[in-house]
Image (tube, rainbow, N blue to C red; front, side, top):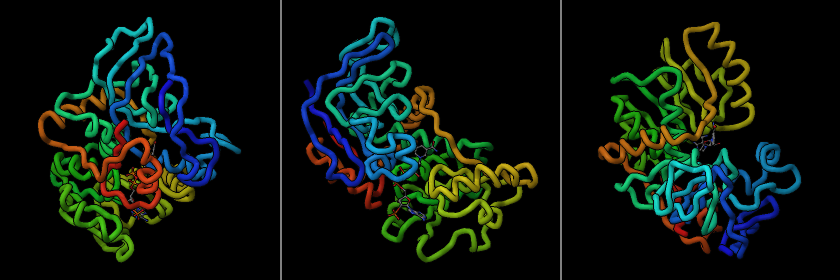
Length: 322
Ligand SMILES: NC(=O)c1ccc[n+]([C@@H]2O[C@H](COP(=O)([O-])OP(=O)(O)OC[C@H]3O[C@@H](n4cnc5c(N)ncnc54)[C@H](OP(=O)(O)O)[C@@H]3O)[C@@H](O)[C@H]2O)c1
């Protein structure tokens, strides 16, 4: 048996309970990982709150997945018979969002192909902060057009988990970086490397007259029609998440605008994969990037840890040690 955070109804963090459940057994292509640490992502909170998009994906009336947890960093303690890439004792990390979640527990099974080796330069706490937010940042910034030195890059919603990787990455690639978030997070964004910061409650970044080569929108609240006035010729906007109208307008009108104009509009479809995690490992080992940990909690404190994300109060990543 193992301890795990289990939930059976949508609504609030009160639905989360730490109980004993059977330890999973790895299938032929899976490994069993003893979880060292995990971290909380806004997707975990979305699936607890149970909005319409979350219900469409996670179960209409009640959650299909009983154990959440996307990010895992831990040690391989069991190996399926077809797995050749890992042996017991290997330290791994990964993004389990595409393979069933489950990291809010002492043990989780995952396909070997979903995991990468953890860099020895990272602790389990640091490594657990990386996979989901780090991959979203890397894949979103890489986007349709790679960043050139001197490019003006604006990251909207940059004070949270994704921004804590996206700001230093964009800066590493030579961009002039602007971070947009709530006033309380402006200083943190500057610490992470933003040259300029904007308080979204005070200033609409699409109406400042400044045009950006890349707008990386972590949490879009605008339809795609607002972006052209803030995009330079040849520039692109990549929306990672946001409101339903914002996402729908980018997928529909954004596709037409991309065909008809000299600017590109897209929604990122994130693809967890070990190669990108290895690339991030390389940045950590070279000292070019460092996970930003807002706070560290225990499994028994999971409600408080998730509530921080629900309240938008975290600056960087909220990690849970197991
Ligand atoms: N495309 C994909 O495949 C995919 C997959 C998974 C997740 N996602 C998305 O990826 C994102 C995850 O981001 P994250 O982990 O960095 O979340 P996070 O830690 O919650 O950070 C989001 C930040 O945006 C800020 N914010 C809220 N409203 C804003 C506004 N109107 N303007 C500017 N900033 C605003 C929040 O601050 P306050 O709340 O304090 O205001 C918070 O600091 C989510 O949007 C999620 O839906 C996308």
